[in-house]
Length: 120
Image (cartoon, rainbow, N blue to C red; front, top):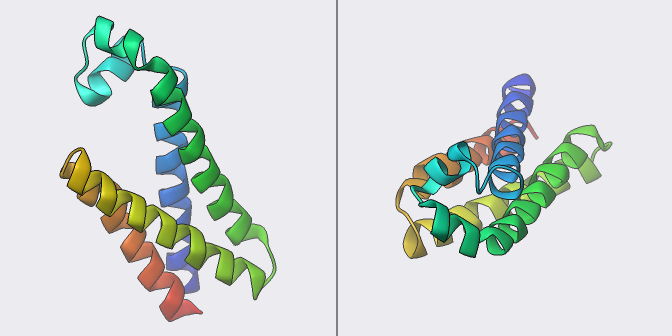
């Protein structure tokens, strides 16, 4: 179960690295604009906000990687904390921005958290 938990945590971390890249570096390019369906003008006007969001997603990914490489009990606790943060962010995003965030962000994190708790 520990291997499954680690794989799921890596997947959630990778998702947040992907979001970081989309929001910080590709926001005003075709892949970034397609990420949320924005046109070039809206992407230009929201680029600073998106870069800020991307940076926060990078912090989530970094925290999850830290949790994977840190010795226990610290690593275990860090994984629980950061997965909880991702779940809260996903639920909030689903309520305030787009319902699909619940399935793209919160659900994978909840599954990873469950696996970490069972493996722990």
